[in-house]
Image (tube, rainbow, N blue to C red; front, side, top):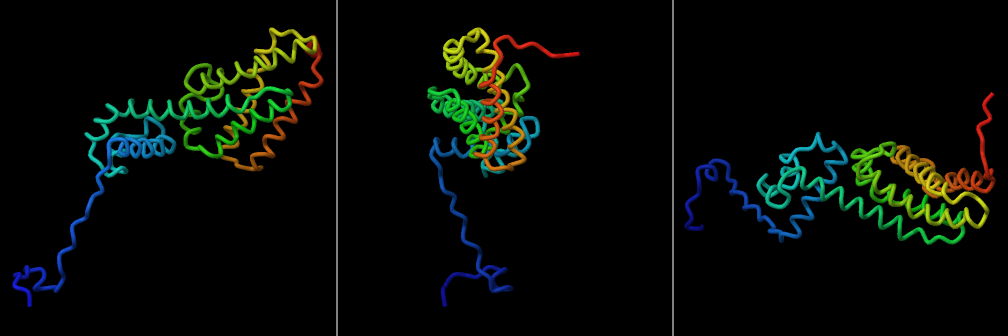
Length: 222
């Protein structure tokens, strides 16, 4: 028998004390990434106002000062989360728009945005909550304007080739991008029909309308 004296608890229950839990120490980069992932999930679930530093720290199993050390506060970590999602969406959209035939461009834009919604739904929730599609200001609106600028450039070339007023390309670009973005916001929760089918219907509406544009449309009110 071991010479170690047994504690009172061991003498009564026969149980041995639990082994101490070994914490894996993260590098600064790993900790920062972990905190961003935790905060991203919380912001998507509860929004900025509904999320607290205490909850971020609790879910990450760290103390509040650790969060402050990396990001300076809730505003700081939120800004980084939004910037990352903004760049991710913008890079995906811009890299997808290759131009070419206008219908191909519409298909590229619709599929790219819906793919982002499907793959990064938490990020899309954060961007839309921060700045809804219908808003004229905010991060998401800025992204949509950047995308619309790319679409405008392509539309202007097509308008010129077909004898339409090139100055109207900006208006049509905003309309097309807004239509896709608003549908993406609806599809975020609906998730039916499937992504490619939603994209096909968007292109169907946009292309069949664009392919029969009147040169000088007028309202036909009674």
